[in-house]
Image (tube, rainbow, N blue to C red; front, side, top):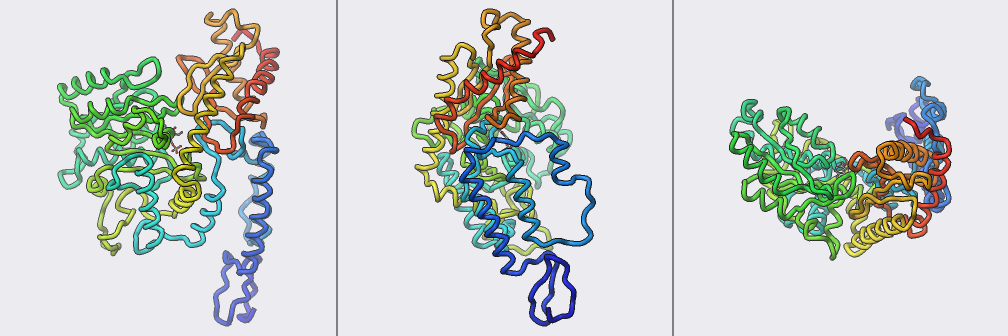
Length: 510
Ligand SMILES: Cc1ncc(COP(=O)(O)O)c(C=O)c1O
Protein backbone atom coordinates (compact mmCIF):
# COMPACT_ATOMS: atom_id res chain seq x y z
CA UNK A 1 0.00 0.00 0.00
CA UNK A 2 1.33 3.40 -0.83
CA UNK A 3 -1.47 5.62 0.45
CA UNK A 4 -0.99 4.71 4.08
CA UNK A 5 -4.56 3.40 4.52
CA UNK A 6 -5.30 0.20 6.34
CA UNK A 7 -7.56 -1.73 4.06
CA UNK A 8 -10.28 -3.97 5.41
CA UNK A 9 -10.13 -7.63 4.38
CA UNK A 10 -11.25 -8.09 0.80
CA UNK A 11 -10.44 -4.50 -0.04
CA UNK A 12 -6.67 -4.76 -0.19
CA UNK A 13 -5.49 -3.36 -3.41
CA UNK A 14 -1.92 -2.90 -4.55
CA UNK A 15 -3.23 0.46 -5.94
CA UNK A 16 -0.87 3.11 -7.19
CA UNK A 17 -0.47 6.40 -5.35
CA UNK A 18 -3.76 8.26 -5.15
CA UNK A 19 -5.86 5.31 -6.32
CA UNK A 20 -8.93 4.63 -4.27
CA UNK A 21 -9.19 1.32 -2.52
CA UNK A 22 -12.80 0.15 -2.04
CA UNK A 23 -13.82 -2.71 0.27
CA UNK A 24 -16.07 -4.16 -2.47
CA UNK A 25 -13.31 -4.20 -5.11
CA UNK A 26 -11.27 -7.29 -5.89
CA UNK A 27 -7.69 -7.10 -7.12
CA UNK A 28 -7.22 -8.83 -10.46
CA UNK A 29 -5.21 -11.77 -9.12
CA UNK A 30 -7.69 -12.43 -6.32
CA UNK A 31 -10.54 -12.25 -8.83
CA UNK A 32 -8.77 -14.79 -10.98
CA UNK A 33 -8.07 -17.20 -8.12
CA UNK A 34 -11.60 -17.02 -6.71
CA UNK A 35 -13.11 -17.36 -10.18
CA UNK A 36 -11.07 -20.41 -11.13
CA UNK A 37 -11.84 -22.07 -7.80
CA UNK A 38 -15.55 -21.48 -8.38
CA UNK A 39 -15.45 -22.80 -11.93
CA UNK A 40 -13.57 -25.91 -10.74
CA UNK A 41 -16.25 -26.55 -8.15
CA UNK A 42 -19.10 -26.07 -10.63
CA UNK A 43 -17.37 -28.35 -13.12
CA UNK A 44 -17.43 -31.11 -10.51
CA UNK A 45 -21.11 -30.47 -9.83
CA UNK A 46 -21.97 -30.73 -13.51
CA UNK A 47 -19.82 -33.84 -13.95
CA UNK A 48 -21.51 -35.62 -11.06
CA UNK A 49 -25.04 -34.30 -11.37
CA UNK A 50 -26.60 -37.66 -12.24
CA UNK A 51 -25.09 -39.37 -9.19
CA UNK A 52 -26.24 -36.82 -6.63
CA UNK A 53 -29.77 -36.60 -5.17
CA UNK A 54 -32.22 -34.17 -6.79
CA UNK A 55 -32.39 -32.39 -3.44
CA UNK A 56 -30.80 -32.63 -0.01
CA UNK A 57 -34.36 -32.56 1.33
CA UNK A 58 -33.38 -30.45 4.35
CA UNK A 59 -36.07 -28.85 6.51
CA UNK A 60 -36.41 -25.08 6.93
CA UNK A 61 -34.75 -25.15 10.36
CA UNK A 62 -31.74 -27.11 9.06
CA UNK A 63 -31.16 -24.62 6.28
CA UNK A 64 -31.51 -21.62 8.58
CA UNK A 65 -28.92 -23.18 10.90
CA UNK A 66 -26.66 -23.84 7.93
CA UNK A 67 -26.53 -20.18 6.92
CA UNK A 68 -26.71 -18.92 10.52
CA UNK A 69 -29.93 -17.13 9.63
CA UNK A 70 -30.20 -15.10 12.83
CA UNK A 71 -26.66 -13.72 12.68
CA UNK A 72 -26.47 -9.92 12.39
CA UNK A 73 -24.89 -8.35 9.33
CA UNK A 74 -21.14 -8.15 9.94
CA UNK A 75 -19.64 -4.74 10.66
CA UNK A 76 -16.39 -5.67 9.00
CA UNK A 77 -15.92 -7.33 5.63
CA UNK A 78 -14.24 -10.64 4.82
CA UNK A 79 -12.04 -11.93 1.97
CA UNK A 80 -14.04 -12.45 -1.22
CA UNK A 81 -12.42 -15.78 -2.16
CA UNK A 82 -13.34 -17.33 1.19
CA UNK A 83 -16.90 -16.02 1.00
CA UNK A 84 -17.41 -17.38 -2.51
CA UNK A 85 -16.02 -20.77 -1.54
CA UNK A 86 -18.32 -20.90 1.49
CA UNK A 87 -21.39 -19.86 -0.54
CA UNK A 88 -20.54 -22.42 -3.22
CA UNK A 89 -20.21 -25.12 -0.56
CA UNK A 90 -23.62 -24.39 0.96
CA UNK A 91 -25.41 -23.93 -2.35
CA UNK A 92 -23.94 -26.84 -4.28
CA UNK A 93 -24.27 -29.26 -1.39
CA UNK A 94 -27.78 -28.46 -0.19
CA UNK A 95 -29.79 -26.94 -3.06
CA UNK A 96 -32.53 -28.54 -5.06
CA UNK A 97 -31.11 -29.19 -8.53
CA UNK A 98 -33.54 -28.50 -11.34
CA UNK A 99 -30.63 -29.44 -13.59
CA UNK A 100 -30.88 -33.02 -12.31
CA UNK A 101 -32.17 -35.53 -14.91
CA UNK A 102 -34.94 -36.62 -12.54
CA UNK A 103 -36.27 -33.15 -11.82
CA UNK A 104 -39.63 -33.07 -13.60
CA UNK A 105 -41.52 -30.56 -11.46
CA UNK A 106 -43.44 -27.41 -12.38
CA UNK A 107 -42.18 -25.92 -15.66
CA UNK A 108 -38.60 -25.35 -14.65
CA UNK A 109 -35.90 -26.44 -17.02
CA UNK A 110 -32.35 -27.61 -16.60
CA UNK A 111 -30.11 -24.58 -17.00
CA UNK A 112 -27.82 -24.65 -20.04
CA UNK A 113 -24.16 -24.43 -18.95
CA UNK A 114 -23.43 -21.78 -21.58
CA UNK A 115 -26.08 -19.64 -19.88
CA UNK A 116 -24.26 -19.94 -16.56
CA UNK A 117 -21.10 -18.56 -18.09
CA UNK A 118 -23.05 -15.97 -20.07
CA UNK A 119 -24.49 -14.57 -16.84
CA UNK A 120 -20.97 -14.10 -15.50
CA UNK A 121 -19.91 -12.32 -18.68
CA UNK A 122 -23.06 -10.19 -18.69
CA UNK A 123 -22.49 -9.14 -15.09
CA UNK A 124 -18.86 -8.32 -15.78
CA UNK A 125 -19.65 -6.02 -18.71
CA UNK A 126 -22.81 -4.84 -16.92
CA UNK A 127 -24.51 -2.97 -19.77
CA UNK A 128 -27.71 -1.16 -18.87
CA UNK A 129 -29.98 -2.46 -21.61
CA UNK A 130 -32.62 0.19 -20.96
CA UNK A 131 -30.99 2.56 -23.44
CA UNK A 132 -29.02 1.90 -26.60
CA UNK A 133 -26.39 4.51 -25.68
CA UNK A 134 -25.65 2.63 -22.46
CA UNK A 135 -25.55 -0.78 -24.09
CA UNK A 136 -24.77 -0.51 -27.80
CA UNK A 137 -23.66 -4.11 -28.31
CA UNK A 138 -26.02 -5.63 -25.76
CA UNK A 139 -29.07 -3.80 -27.19
CA UNK A 140 -28.30 -5.11 -30.67
CA UNK A 141 -27.80 -8.63 -29.31
CA UNK A 142 -31.19 -8.41 -27.59
CA UNK A 143 -32.78 -7.16 -30.84
CA UNK A 144 -31.30 -10.09 -32.74
CA UNK A 145 -32.43 -12.52 -30.04
CA UNK A 146 -35.98 -11.16 -30.32
CA UNK A 147 -35.91 -11.51 -34.12
CA UNK A 148 -34.67 -15.10 -33.83
CA UNK A 149 -37.31 -16.00 -31.27
CA UNK A 150 -40.02 -14.46 -33.48
CA UNK A 151 -38.64 -16.52 -36.37
CA UNK A 152 -38.80 -19.73 -34.34
CA UNK A 153 -42.48 -19.06 -33.61
CA UNK A 154 -43.45 -17.95 -37.12
CA UNK A 155 -44.18 -14.49 -35.76
CA UNK A 156 -43.66 -11.55 -38.20
CA UNK A 157 -40.05 -10.32 -38.42
CA UNK A 158 -41.23 -6.72 -38.01
CA UNK A 159 -42.65 -7.31 -34.55
CA UNK A 160 -41.24 -5.72 -31.43
CA UNK A 161 -40.37 -7.50 -28.23
CA UNK A 162 -38.12 -7.61 -25.23
CA UNK A 163 -36.80 -9.94 -22.60
CA UNK A 164 -38.35 -9.74 -19.15
CA UNK A 165 -38.10 -11.69 -15.91
CA UNK A 166 -40.40 -14.55 -16.95
CA UNK A 167 -43.80 -15.65 -18.18
CA UNK A 168 -45.78 -13.54 -15.73
CA UNK A 169 -44.25 -10.26 -16.83
CA UNK A 170 -44.20 -11.27 -20.51
CA UNK A 171 -47.96 -11.87 -20.31
CA UNK A 172 -48.43 -8.59 -18.46
CA UNK A 173 -46.69 -6.75 -21.30
CA UNK A 174 -49.15 -8.25 -23.82
CA UNK A 175 -52.23 -7.38 -21.77
CA UNK A 176 -50.99 -3.90 -20.89
CA UNK A 177 -50.31 -3.16 -24.56
CA UNK A 178 -53.80 -4.41 -25.42
CA UNK A 179 -55.28 -2.20 -22.72
CA UNK A 180 -53.35 0.83 -23.97
CA UNK A 181 -54.52 0.14 -27.52
CA UNK A 182 -58.11 0.49 -26.34
CA UNK A 183 -57.33 3.40 -23.97
CA UNK A 184 -54.41 5.33 -25.51
CA UNK A 185 -52.65 7.70 -23.14
CA UNK A 186 -53.12 10.69 -25.44
CA UNK A 187 -56.92 10.24 -25.49
CA UNK A 188 -57.61 10.54 -21.80
CA UNK A 189 -55.77 7.51 -20.42
CA UNK A 190 -57.72 5.07 -18.32
CA UNK A 191 -60.91 6.85 -17.26
CA UNK A 192 -62.48 4.83 -14.43
CA UNK A 193 -65.96 4.89 -15.95
CA UNK A 194 -64.64 3.27 -19.16
CA UNK A 195 -62.07 1.00 -17.51
CA UNK A 196 -64.93 -0.26 -15.35
CA UNK A 197 -66.49 -1.72 -18.51
CA UNK A 198 -63.30 -3.35 -19.86
CA UNK A 199 -63.24 -7.17 -20.04
CA UNK A 200 -60.66 -9.90 -20.78
CA UNK A 201 -61.51 -13.47 -21.84
CA UNK A 202 -59.59 -16.58 -20.77
CA UNK A 203 -60.33 -20.09 -19.55
CA UNK A 204 -60.02 -21.22 -15.94
CA UNK A 205 -56.96 -23.18 -17.05
CA UNK A 206 -55.07 -19.92 -17.60
CA UNK A 207 -52.11 -19.33 -15.27
CA UNK A 208 -52.57 -16.96 -12.35
CA UNK A 209 -50.57 -14.18 -14.03
CA UNK A 210 -53.93 -13.04 -15.38
CA UNK A 211 -55.39 -12.32 -11.94
CA UNK A 212 -52.29 -10.32 -11.02
CA UNK A 213 -52.35 -8.37 -14.28
CA UNK A 214 -56.02 -7.50 -14.05
CA UNK A 215 -55.66 -6.43 -10.47
CA UNK A 216 -52.55 -4.33 -11.13
CA UNK A 217 -53.96 -2.69 -14.26
CA UNK A 218 -57.15 -1.60 -12.51
CA UNK A 219 -59.76 -3.79 -14.17
CA UNK A 220 -63.05 -3.98 -12.29
CA UNK A 221 -63.91 -7.11 -10.28
CA UNK A 222 -65.53 -9.62 -12.63
CA UNK A 223 -63.78 -8.16 -15.69
CA UNK A 224 -62.00 -11.45 -16.22
CA UNK A 225 -64.54 -13.54 -18.13
CA UNK A 226 -64.02 -17.27 -17.63
CA UNK A 227 -64.59 -18.99 -20.96
CA UNK A 228 -65.68 -22.62 -20.85
CA UNK A 229 -63.42 -25.56 -21.73
CA UNK A 230 -64.02 -28.89 -23.44
CA UNK A 231 -63.21 -32.30 -21.95
CA UNK A 232 -59.55 -31.78 -22.88
CA UNK A 233 -59.31 -28.46 -20.95
CA UNK A 234 -59.23 -26.46 -24.22
CA UNK A 235 -61.06 -23.18 -24.74
CA UNK A 236 -64.60 -23.64 -26.07
CA UNK A 237 -64.78 -21.31 -29.08
CA UNK A 238 -68.60 -21.25 -29.22
CA UNK A 239 -68.72 -20.16 -25.62
CA UNK A 240 -66.15 -17.43 -26.33
CA UNK A 241 -68.15 -16.16 -29.30
CA UNK A 242 -71.39 -16.13 -27.29
CA UNK A 243 -69.82 -14.31 -24.31
CA UNK A 244 -68.20 -11.67 -26.49
CA UNK A 245 -71.46 -10.99 -28.34
CA UNK A 246 -73.47 -10.77 -25.11
CA UNK A 247 -70.93 -8.46 -23.45
CA UNK A 248 -70.78 -6.12 -26.45
CA UNK A 249 -74.61 -5.98 -26.47
CA UNK A 250 -74.47 -5.10 -22.77
CA UNK A 251 -72.15 -2.15 -23.49
CA UNK A 252 -68.96 -3.73 -22.15
CA UNK A 253 -65.54 -3.12 -23.76
CA UNK A 254 -63.68 -6.35 -24.60
CA UNK A 255 -59.95 -5.60 -24.40
CA UNK A 256 -58.33 -8.96 -25.09
CA UNK A 257 -58.84 -12.69 -25.48
CA UNK A 258 -56.15 -14.97 -24.06
CA UNK A 259 -55.32 -18.30 -25.70
CA UNK A 260 -53.02 -20.87 -24.13
CA UNK A 261 -50.21 -22.49 -26.09
CA UNK A 262 -49.80 -25.15 -23.41
CA UNK A 263 -51.65 -24.64 -20.13
CA UNK A 264 -49.71 -24.73 -16.90
CA UNK A 265 -51.49 -27.75 -15.44
CA UNK A 266 -51.86 -30.16 -18.34
CA UNK A 267 -50.16 -28.54 -21.35
CA UNK A 268 -53.47 -28.26 -23.24
CA UNK A 269 -53.26 -26.15 -26.38
CA UNK A 270 -56.31 -23.99 -27.09
CA UNK A 271 -57.65 -23.88 -30.68
CA UNK A 272 -55.58 -20.78 -31.45
CA UNK A 273 -56.53 -20.30 -35.16
CA UNK A 274 -60.23 -20.43 -34.29
CA UNK A 275 -59.73 -17.96 -31.42
CA UNK A 276 -57.81 -15.66 -33.78
CA UNK A 277 -60.78 -15.72 -36.17
CA UNK A 278 -63.21 -14.77 -33.39
CA UNK A 279 -60.91 -11.94 -32.32
CA UNK A 280 -60.79 -10.64 -35.89
CA UNK A 281 -64.61 -10.75 -36.12
CA UNK A 282 -64.90 -8.64 -32.97
CA UNK A 283 -61.82 -6.46 -33.47
CA UNK A 284 -60.41 -7.66 -30.15
CA UNK A 285 -56.72 -8.09 -29.24
CA UNK A 286 -55.56 -11.71 -29.30
CA UNK A 287 -52.91 -12.56 -26.74
CA UNK A 288 -51.28 -15.99 -26.46
CA UNK A 289 -49.65 -17.33 -23.31
CA UNK A 290 -46.96 -19.58 -24.74
CA UNK A 291 -44.80 -19.45 -21.61
CA UNK A 292 -44.74 -23.22 -21.37
CA UNK A 293 -45.54 -24.60 -24.83
CA UNK A 294 -44.85 -21.74 -27.22
CA UNK A 295 -41.43 -22.94 -28.37
CA UNK A 296 -42.88 -26.30 -29.41
CA UNK A 297 -44.47 -24.39 -32.32
CA UNK A 298 -41.04 -24.55 -34.01
CA UNK A 299 -41.35 -28.33 -34.50
CA UNK A 300 -42.05 -29.56 -38.02
CA UNK A 301 -44.93 -31.68 -36.69
CA UNK A 302 -46.44 -29.00 -34.43
CA UNK A 303 -50.24 -29.03 -34.53
CA UNK A 304 -52.12 -26.37 -36.48
CA UNK A 305 -53.64 -25.26 -33.20
CA UNK A 306 -50.21 -24.58 -31.74
CA UNK A 307 -48.93 -22.86 -34.87
CA UNK A 308 -51.90 -20.52 -34.58
CA UNK A 309 -49.79 -18.68 -32.00
CA UNK A 310 -48.27 -16.82 -34.97
CA UNK A 311 -51.67 -15.13 -35.53
CA UNK A 312 -51.66 -13.38 -32.16
CA UNK A 313 -51.29 -9.66 -31.52
CA UNK A 314 -48.98 -10.45 -28.63
CA UNK A 315 -47.27 -13.59 -27.36
CA UNK A 316 -45.46 -14.52 -24.16
CA UNK A 317 -42.80 -17.22 -24.30
CA UNK A 318 -40.24 -18.26 -21.74
CA UNK A 319 -36.64 -18.98 -22.72
CA UNK A 320 -36.12 -20.08 -19.10
CA UNK A 321 -38.54 -22.92 -19.74
CA UNK A 322 -38.18 -24.60 -23.10
CA UNK A 323 -34.98 -22.94 -24.31
CA UNK A 324 -33.26 -24.14 -21.12
CA UNK A 325 -31.93 -20.65 -20.30
CA UNK A 326 -30.99 -20.25 -16.63
CA UNK A 327 -33.52 -18.13 -14.68
CA UNK A 328 -34.61 -15.43 -15.40
CA UNK A 329 -35.62 -14.99 -19.02
CA UNK A 330 -39.13 -14.44 -20.33
CA UNK A 331 -39.95 -12.84 -23.65
CA UNK A 332 -42.86 -10.68 -24.85
CA UNK A 333 -43.51 -10.20 -28.57
CA UNK A 334 -45.96 -7.65 -30.00
CA UNK A 335 -47.07 -7.69 -33.63
CA UNK A 336 -47.44 -3.91 -33.87
CA UNK A 337 -44.31 -2.11 -32.61
CA UNK A 338 -46.05 1.28 -32.70
CA UNK A 339 -48.74 0.19 -30.26
CA UNK A 340 -46.16 -1.57 -28.12
CA UNK A 341 -44.00 1.54 -27.83
CA UNK A 342 -46.99 3.79 -27.26
CA UNK A 343 -47.92 1.71 -24.21
CA UNK A 344 -44.61 2.19 -22.43
CA UNK A 345 -42.74 5.15 -23.88
CA UNK A 346 -42.22 8.35 -21.91
CA UNK A 347 -39.73 11.13 -22.56
CA UNK A 348 -38.59 12.52 -19.25
CA UNK A 349 -36.28 15.57 -19.37
CA UNK A 350 -33.53 13.71 -17.52
CA UNK A 351 -33.00 11.19 -20.33
CA UNK A 352 -31.36 12.11 -23.59
CA UNK A 353 -31.51 8.99 -25.71
CA UNK A 354 -31.22 8.57 -29.44
CA UNK A 355 -34.86 8.17 -30.51
CA UNK A 356 -33.88 6.37 -33.73
CA UNK A 357 -32.28 3.52 -31.81
CA UNK A 358 -34.12 0.83 -29.88
CA UNK A 359 -34.21 1.92 -26.25
CA UNK A 360 -35.75 -0.98 -24.36
CA UNK A 361 -36.98 1.35 -21.63
CA UNK A 362 -39.69 2.27 -24.20
CA UNK A 363 -41.04 -1.29 -24.47
CA UNK A 364 -41.58 -2.57 -20.97
CA UNK A 365 -42.06 -1.77 -17.31
CA UNK A 366 -38.36 -1.82 -16.37
CA UNK A 367 -36.05 1.16 -16.47
CA UNK A 368 -32.53 -0.12 -15.81
CA UNK A 369 -32.27 -3.55 -17.38
CA UNK A 370 -29.69 -6.31 -17.16
CA UNK A 371 -28.26 -8.22 -20.10
CA UNK A 372 -30.61 -11.24 -20.02
CA UNK A 373 -30.33 -11.55 -23.78
CA UNK A 374 -26.75 -12.82 -23.68
CA UNK A 375 -27.56 -16.19 -22.11
CA UNK A 376 -30.52 -16.68 -24.46
CA UNK A 377 -28.56 -15.58 -27.54
CA UNK A 378 -25.56 -17.80 -26.77
CA UNK A 379 -27.84 -20.78 -26.07
CA UNK A 380 -29.61 -20.28 -29.40
CA UNK A 381 -26.28 -20.08 -31.20
CA UNK A 382 -24.80 -23.09 -29.42
CA UNK A 383 -27.73 -25.40 -30.18
CA UNK A 384 -28.89 -23.81 -33.42
CA UNK A 385 -32.45 -24.04 -34.69
CA UNK A 386 -32.12 -27.78 -35.33
CA UNK A 387 -30.66 -28.40 -31.89
CA UNK A 388 -33.40 -26.44 -30.12
CA UNK A 389 -36.13 -28.29 -32.02
CA UNK A 390 -34.41 -31.63 -31.39
CA UNK A 391 -34.28 -31.13 -27.62
CA UNK A 392 -37.93 -30.13 -27.42
CA UNK A 393 -38.95 -33.07 -29.63
CA UNK A 394 -36.99 -35.42 -27.37
CA UNK A 395 -38.70 -34.06 -24.24
CA UNK A 396 -42.06 -34.64 -25.91
CA UNK A 397 -41.07 -38.18 -26.94
CA UNK A 398 -40.02 -38.92 -23.34
CA UNK A 399 -43.39 -37.69 -22.05
CA UNK A 400 -45.11 -40.00 -24.53
CA UNK A 401 -42.93 -42.86 -23.32
CA UNK A 402 -43.88 -42.10 -19.72
CA UNK A 403 -47.58 -41.96 -20.55
CA UNK A 404 -47.40 -45.29 -22.41
CA UNK A 405 -45.34 -46.93 -19.64
CA UNK A 406 -47.78 -45.84 -16.96
CA UNK A 407 -50.77 -47.00 -18.97
CA UNK A 408 -49.25 -50.48 -19.15
CA UNK A 409 -48.86 -50.63 -15.34
CA UNK A 410 -51.78 -51.96 -13.28
CA UNK A 411 -51.30 -49.49 -10.45
CA UNK A 412 -51.44 -46.25 -12.41
CA UNK A 413 -54.11 -44.28 -14.19
CA UNK A 414 -53.12 -41.58 -16.65
CA UNK A 415 -55.42 -38.56 -16.85
CA UNK A 416 -53.81 -36.36 -19.50
CA UNK A 417 -50.85 -36.20 -21.83
CA UNK A 418 -50.12 -33.05 -23.86
CA UNK A 419 -46.77 -31.86 -25.20
CA UNK A 420 -44.31 -32.87 -22.45
CA UNK A 421 -46.72 -32.97 -19.50
CA UNK A 422 -48.25 -36.20 -18.15
CA UNK A 423 -50.72 -36.25 -15.23
CA UNK A 424 -51.48 -39.49 -13.43
CA UNK A 425 -52.32 -41.14 -10.14
CA UNK A 426 -50.83 -44.06 -8.29
CA UNK A 427 -53.55 -46.57 -7.33
CA UNK A 428 -52.34 -49.26 -4.88
CA UNK A 429 -53.26 -52.85 -5.50
CA UNK A 430 -55.84 -52.90 -2.69
CA UNK A 431 -57.81 -50.00 -4.23
CA UNK A 432 -57.97 -51.18 -7.81
CA UNK A 433 -61.43 -52.74 -7.64
CA UNK A 434 -62.96 -49.74 -5.82
CA UNK A 435 -61.83 -47.00 -8.20
CA UNK A 436 -64.70 -44.57 -8.84
CA UNK A 437 -66.26 -45.02 -5.41
CA UNK A 438 -66.32 -41.63 -3.61
CA UNK A 439 -64.52 -42.86 -0.47
CA UNK A 440 -61.77 -44.50 -2.54
CA UNK A 441 -61.38 -41.44 -4.76
CA UNK A 442 -61.01 -39.24 -1.67
CA UNK A 443 -58.41 -41.64 -0.28
CA UNK A 444 -56.50 -41.71 -3.58
CA UNK A 445 -56.37 -37.92 -3.51
CA UNK A 446 -54.87 -37.96 -0.03
CA UNK A 447 -52.48 -40.76 -0.89
CA UNK A 448 -51.21 -39.04 -4.03
CA UNK A 449 -50.81 -35.73 -2.25
CA UNK A 450 -48.78 -37.41 0.48
CA UNK A 451 -46.82 -39.23 -2.22
CA UNK A 452 -45.97 -35.97 -3.94
CA UNK A 453 -44.73 -34.52 -0.65
CA UNK A 454 -42.64 -37.60 0.07
CA UNK A 455 -41.11 -37.59 -3.41
CA UNK A 456 -40.26 -33.89 -3.11
CA UNK A 457 -37.81 -34.56 -0.30
CA UNK A 458 -36.73 -38.07 -1.36
CA UNK A 459 -33.99 -36.85 -3.68
CA UNK A 460 -34.88 -39.67 -6.10
CA UNK A 461 -37.45 -37.93 -8.29
CA UNK A 462 -39.24 -34.60 -8.27
CA UNK A 463 -42.73 -34.24 -9.73
CA UNK A 464 -45.37 -31.59 -9.02
CA UNK A 465 -49.16 -31.85 -9.12
CA UNK A 466 -52.28 -30.89 -11.03
CA UNK A 467 -55.92 -31.09 -10.05
CA UNK A 468 -57.90 -32.84 -12.80
CA UNK A 469 -61.68 -32.91 -12.29
CA UNK A 470 -61.17 -32.77 -8.53
CA UNK A 471 -58.50 -35.48 -8.51
CA UNK A 472 -55.06 -34.79 -7.07
CA UNK A 473 -52.76 -35.94 -9.85
CA UNK A 474 -49.01 -36.28 -9.93
CA UNK A 475 -47.64 -34.24 -12.82
CA UNK A 476 -44.39 -34.81 -14.69
CA UNK A 477 -43.29 -31.98 -16.97
CA UNK A 478 -40.20 -32.73 -19.01
CA UNK A 479 -38.34 -29.57 -20.00
CA UNK A 480 -35.03 -31.14 -19.17
CA UNK A 481 -32.29 -31.87 -21.70
CA UNK A 482 -30.64 -34.25 -19.21
CA UNK A 483 -33.60 -36.58 -18.75
CA UNK A 484 -33.21 -39.81 -20.69
CA UNK A 485 -35.25 -42.95 -21.36
CA UNK A 486 -33.67 -44.73 -18.37
CA UNK A 487 -34.91 -41.96 -16.05
CA UNK A 488 -38.42 -42.32 -17.46
CA UNK A 489 -38.36 -46.10 -17.13
CA UNK A 490 -37.33 -45.81 -13.48
CA UNK A 491 -40.34 -43.65 -12.56
CA UNK A 492 -43.04 -46.33 -12.01
CA UNK A 493 -40.72 -48.33 -9.74
CA UNK A 494 -39.73 -45.31 -7.63
CA UNK A 495 -43.30 -44.10 -7.20
CA UNK A 496 -44.72 -47.56 -6.47
CA UNK A 497 -42.08 -48.18 -3.79
CA UNK A 498 -42.89 -44.92 -1.96
CA UNK A 499 -46.60 -45.34 -2.70
CA UNK A 500 -46.78 -48.84 -1.22
CA UNK A 501 -45.00 -47.71 1.95
CA UNK A 502 -47.37 -44.79 2.36
CA UNK A 503 -50.41 -46.94 1.63
CA UNK A 504 -49.34 -49.29 4.42
CA UNK A 505 -49.28 -46.44 6.96
CA UNK A 506 -52.02 -44.06 5.80
CA UNK A 507 -55.45 -44.22 7.41
CA UNK A 508 -58.09 -44.92 4.72
CA UNK A 509 -60.67 -42.93 6.69
CA UNK A 510 -60.28 -39.13 6.44
C1 LIG B 1 -48.55 -21.34 -19.05
C2 LIG B 1 -47.76 -20.52 -18.08
N1 LIG B 1 -47.89 -19.19 -18.08
C3 LIG B 1 -47.19 -18.39 -17.25
C4 LIG B 1 -46.32 -18.93 -16.34
C5 LIG B 1 -45.52 -18.04 -15.42
O1 LIG B 1 -44.19 -18.04 -15.85
P1 LIG B 1 -43.01 -17.52 -14.90
O2 LIG B 1 -42.98 -18.45 -13.75
O3 LIG B 1 -41.81 -17.60 -15.77
O4 LIG B 1 -43.35 -16.13 -14.51
C6 LIG B 1 -46.15 -20.32 -16.29
C7 LIG B 1 -45.25 -20.95 -15.30
O5 LIG B 1 -45.13 -22.12 -15.20
C8 LIG B 1 -46.88 -21.13 -17.19
O6 LIG B 1 -46.74 -22.47 -17.21
